[in-house]
Length: 269
Ligand SMILES: NC(=O)c1ccc[n+]([C@@H]2O[C@H](COP(=O)([O-])OP(=O)(O)OC[C@H]3O[C@@H](n4cnc5c(N)ncnc54)[C@H](OP(=O)(O)O)[C@@H]3O)[C@@H](O)[C@H]2O)c1
Image (cartoon, rainbow, N blue to C red; front, side):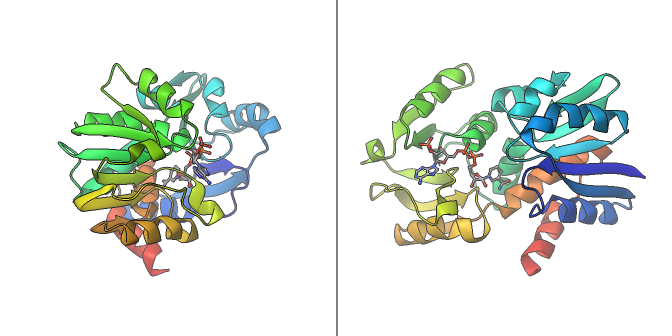
């Protein structure tokens, strides 16, 4: 039986095994999918050993998404642009690294009927997840793409790094005062500490949609803030999680799974 896993530390909480087993069952594919806890210090040696043991692929989660890049034999454009790898595919000589996070976000927004083309899009946060979604967001041809962050240098750096793909307006959160957006995407991890960063009022244009990469309890502060600020709808990032997994599944198996039905299963739990 082909063996797959999500690697990270900690990783026991990961929903990836549940998601991939559900995809496989629906596609009548037999596989084993585990969660493997690997310490950062052991990453290089473990990946080499796992390759030798014939594992068929890995998803990569925190804290290894950036570090694993240097251990790949080659990288997809998406991984290179994102500066991170979330999917590993074995090659005869090592690992091919890919990144499906940005595709997952854009696919989930499409599933929700959120149009990006011609819209004013704001991304809050400029960490690893924000970097991973910029190229796919620019490819949808928004009217504008603004990145705001607590640390002012990170959006500036992203704006330079992606200049060949389009214009990215760098801001601090407070410098957004007076601007309005049609789609507001939260890519900060602030919700994990139970709070929204302080933000100016009036960022939501009429009918604006809000999307949070976080889900579960970490989504609640953004949900409360966006609702109070008049967003028409707010979505959590569980759909993105399932959609990025679906794209990994497609890369491994050549089959596009039904992300929506697996998302419905997770929501019912
Ligand atoms: N749904 C999915 O499939 C999916 C996929 C990937 C990531 N995510 C989620 O996306 C979020 C971001 O992940 P990441 O990998 O980008 O993390 P990261 O690289 O650590 O970046 C964290 C970002 O959040 C900001 N931030 C953190 N705490 C803050 C606070 N108290 N106030 C203001 N800003 C704060 C940081 O700002 P500074 O630069 O100023 O520190 C930075 O921009 C996480 O919640 C993660 O779970 C979801």
